[in-house]
Length: 126
Image (cartoon, rainbow, N blue to C red):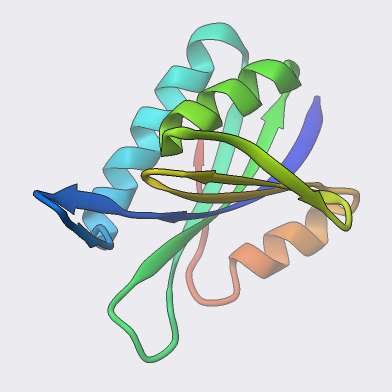
């Protein structure tokens, strides 16, 4: 299986106002994302939700174990309502109506897990 490290900054809308979802809401959205990825591919998702310093905003750090990269990128693009916009120094960046995603292939899985576990233990969805 291939491995991909992903950082997601997600937002939602109420009327015309954009806001950051709560930690509970991000857990639910991550489970929904995993279910959608699982339909086409045997994906294993390990994630951690991290709070921005000094703010009441959260973002996700995720490690995906996947076999179909096209399915992964397609579902992530739909997750944030956008498409790949640019490739900067080795990682793909997605911008969309509902968030931003940075994707990076991971070589050393242990370093990836150390990074996502720095504040809170990661959760794994199989």
